Amino acid sequence: MDDRIARIHAKLAALPATEKASLGPVLTEPQVSAFEDAHGIRLPREFRDFLTRVGHGGYGPAYGLLPMERWVSGAAEAKGGKPSEPFPIVPDLEIAVRPDRRGSLAHVFPGTLTVVERGCSDLTLLVVTGPGRGRLVEVNFEGFFPPRFHADSDFLSWYERWLDFVLAGHCDLNWFADQMAGDEAELVSTLVNDARATRRRAAAYTFITYPTPSASLPEILMQALATEPLPAVRETILRALAAQGDQGRALLPTALADPTPDVRSLAALLMTTPTPQGRRLSTPLRQALGDHLTIEGDDSVRETIQRVLGPPPLSSRA
Image 1 (cartoon, one colour):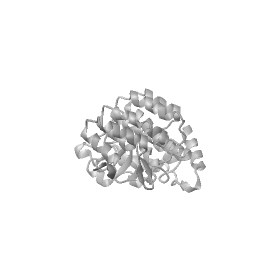
Image 2 (tube, one colour; image 1 turned 90 degrees about the vertical axis):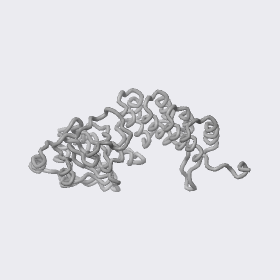
Image 3 (cartoon, helix red, strand yellow; image 1 turned 180 degrees about the vertical axis):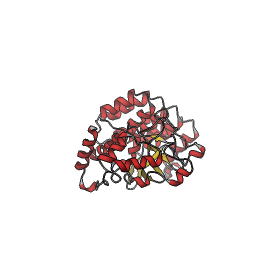
Image 4 (cartoon, helix red, strand yellow; image 1 turned 30 degrees about the horizontal axis):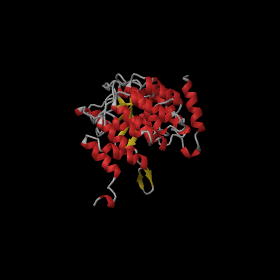
């Protein structure tokens, strides 16, 4: 038996009672086989092991794992979303940042089962047919963003990571779909050395909610920012920097020299700190933005900086 099964059982038992971590009863082999035969598929081994050895439906990300009767939508099947047809997207090739442009496939996802409904038409799917078989993929039914694969290699790794994040105390589990497993050293190594941009971005996303960052992490993130070639990853590194508090935000002005306007705009927006009275901008960061505004040549960035700075004091409007 996969060692992860025993670890998942132990971690479920270690969760606090406030998590209400209950799963439905395991499925029998005949039940699983009947579902497979009905849809012309074979479930990935790791998912089958979870269903027959851990549980079926219940505790999990967002609103929890869906039961078998909700894995497949009859309406979606009628439009071409059959689990037996391949899901065409290959994992980890690139970071897609534009809305879903798959035309007639924008609202159907062949080769998949819906395992989590996250709300606002966001779904987590398990690929059962196609090049991403066994992987989890995040989609939006309305096509607001293109499908993006979770970093985990299979269902057991994905579910165990969920338990690890809950037990470790990640401060905001809404980022879970975009993050990955690993301690700080492993995440830094991925962020700096991995050739796949999707994994570098997942490592950066994980630092947004990482519960025990070292005091040196902001400087390490700055070093990664300086060598990162893709704007989408640099933007995520900036979010991770801002999540480190005042120490991280103090380093954000460096990104005002970034060659990509969207990155410069995001750096300006992240310099503010939320407070009960609204967003606050420290004096040094206000000065840095004011100084940069005098040399910024992009209109959209200038507009963002002016919005962050707010209206000038009355005494200066004469």
